[in-house]
Image (cartoon, rainbow, N blue to C red; front, side, top):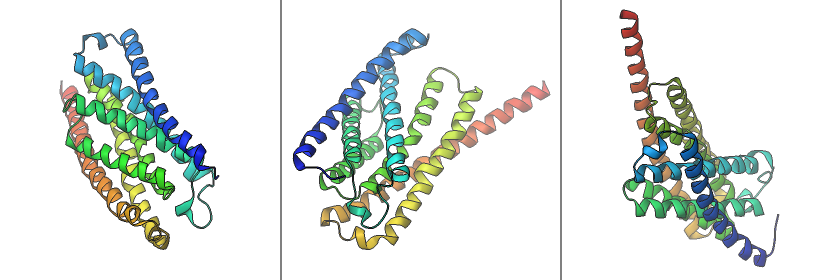
Length: 259
C-alpha cells in the first residue's frame, strides 16, 4: 500500500481538482436534468435553483464517500492487524483529496450566498471537516478514524431529498414520511451510534493515538467530539421534526375518519 512521495505529490492535488470538477459537473447535470424533468424547477427563484443544484453534487459526493469509506474500513481488510493508526492506501488518499475538493467548493458557495445555503453551523462543520481530512491526508495518520467520520455523509441524501420534497410541495406525501423515518434511523446509526463506536475504539487503542504527532493528537481529541456534539444537536431537531410530521398525519387521518 506504500508509494513514493513523488506519486503522492501528484495524487493529492489531482484528487482535490477531481473533487472540484466533480462538483461542477454534477451541478451542471443537475441543472439540465431538473429543468427538463421537473416542472416546478424553472419557476424557482435563482437562489433556490442554486441550492437545488448544490444539493445535487452534495448527494453525489455523499454516496461516493460512504461507499469508499465502507469498503476501506469494513471490506478491504486494510485496517486489520496492528498499528492501524499508520495504515493508509492510495484510495484513502484519493478519497480525502476528492472530499477536500467537495468541501472547499461547497464552503465557497455557502460563503458567496451566505446565509441562503447554510448558516454558521455549516461553516463550522465544513471547516472542521476540511481541517481533519487535510491533516490525515498530509500526515498519513489516523485514516481509519477519518474514514469512519466521512461515512457519516451517508445521511446527506436523505437530508437533501427532504429539502427537495419540501420545495416541491410534497410534505404530505408518503415519500416524505418514509424519507423522514429513514433519515432518523440513518442519522442514529451513522452519526450517533457510529461516533460512540468511534470513541470506544479510540479508547481501546489510545496507545496508538498517543503516538501521533502533537497537533494530530490534540486534533483527534477535539475535532471529532465537536462534530459529535453538532450531530447530536441536529439529531434532536430531526427527532422533533419527525414527531411533528407523525402527529400532523395522525390528526389528518383522524379528521378524515370523522368526516
